[in-house]
Amino acid sequence: MAPHEDVDGREEALRRLAEAAIGETGEPTSEAIAALSPEETRRMLHELRVHQIELWMQNEELQRVQRELEANRLRYYELYNHAPVGYCTLDGAGRILEGNLTLGRLLGVVPEKLIGRTFAEFIHPDDQDTYYLYGKGLPGNGTPGVCEIRLFQEGDAPFWARVESARVPDGGDCLGTRMVLGDITAQRQLEIDKRMLDVRLQQAQTLESLGRLAGGVAHDMNNVLGAILGLSTACLEHPPEPTATRHAFETISKAALRGGKMVQGLLSFARQGAIEARELDVNLLLEDEVHLLERTALAKVRLRLELAPDLRSVSGDPVALARAVMNLCVNAVDATPEDGTLTLRTLNVDKDWVEIQVLDTGCGMSQEVQDHALEPFFTTKPEGRGTGLGLSMVHGIVQAHQGQLHIHSEVGSGTQVSIRLPALRSLAPHGAVRTTPTGVEGAGGLQILVVDDDLLVLGAMESLLSVLGHLPTGVTSGEEAVLRLESGLRPDLVILDLNMPGWGGAGTLPRLRLLMPDLPILLATGRADQFAMDLAASQPRVSLLAKPFSLADLKARLAVWAPGVNL
Image (cartoon, rainbow, N blue to C red; front, side, top):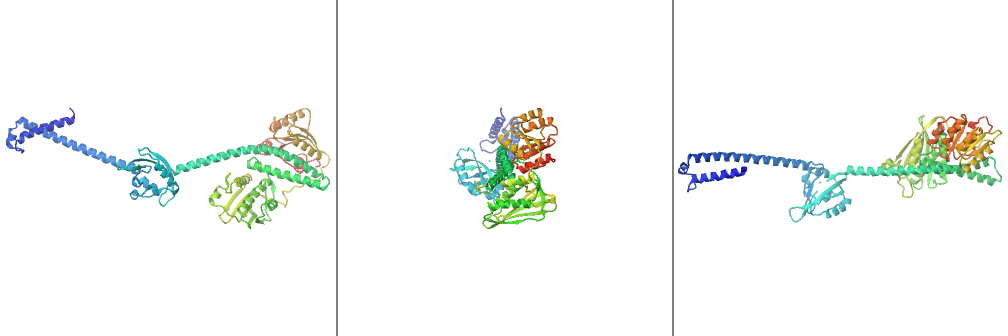
């Protein structure tokens, strides 16, 4: 028999004994008690004691259950109030009925003061419609829904929150809302950062593809420009008549040189162009760029030149540095209103640096814009007017010269961009970057083997070398060049194109060196990248000859290898 059945039996036995002891009056009488037999009396006392014990045990059980309920209530309070997410309950009108401590911290209000306020007043104005449509779409059967909105913390900036809620009966005819509320601002920022990284990865892949394209285009273009420039400068060495014809060749030479600068700019953009270091007078370089600016961008602004007369020389690539300065000047002019001022300034900084400053009186840049100004593809110009690559290219050129670039700007107060370059110890003589053709070539020439797969370039090279009094032999592949040497040809010098089918320059170079260990070799290339520089440095008596080159450039390079020849 179950315990509660024993209790019920005892209560029934006690009832019968009590009735027997009470009698007809309803009160216990001595006669009725005396009428009980000793056995019945003992039984009654026993049953009373047992019942007393059972009542005590039931009371203990009730107290234990009460303590557990209180502990559970406290645990619920702790879990509810100190949960990592905010909890709240809304009535049918969207008023807050209850909320936990986390909700209060998220909204910047103690929970007691949230009671009675509408949840919508904490939602960012731009997200009110989103929340309204979300609430309208919640079913009334307790199925949860999710949305992401911005909430206001009183006295602070908005934050992103993930809202999970369900509509349930509120005890009356209306449906209330129970609302699992979490701050996802950090998660949102991670997602934004990831998207930015994905964009930059795509940009890097785009740059890599453009770099490969630029390298191929540069090689072919420099071959064409090299032929044009070489022949036009050769004709200028022996001026034809009439004067108009000479003027035409001068124009052709200038056009070829400009084309070469454009190709070099393409290679610098693709980070494939090598720095051709030479001693430079920065003042002279700026003066040359100003002449170009005067014909193009300086019509709307005043120009001020503040060039240090005792400026130290630097070692650098004049084409690359000129392009960097031109880019800064164009940016400055674009940012400067009519009648503004563009200042180009040079100065010595201590004994170690030469500084170029480009200053404008334009609109200036905010700190946020300055923080991103050197990033590829970042631009504040309207669509179609800027690529966002200009300052990034300038930065790359400065870094390639072991220099430093600094930007200082304030909105409405203009911008100053400073380029610092390592200074050489000596002062640069005026006109250090200008080269003029040397005198007429003399008698006595070199036996030169020219190796190039481009017939246009090969023909131009043979003509140039013939004009200089040399004896050229042209072949169209490295394989043919090796056969000529194996057949007994002993040239004084080889001009070897680097980019050719078959063995190419890289495969031909060591084979030529095995046949003639002391043979001087000029590696001619329209893409003087790091690979070309490393290849030239790996072999003795090998030097790079970057295309396009003029007659004067070729003469100067040949003089290095044949100083005894009267050139």
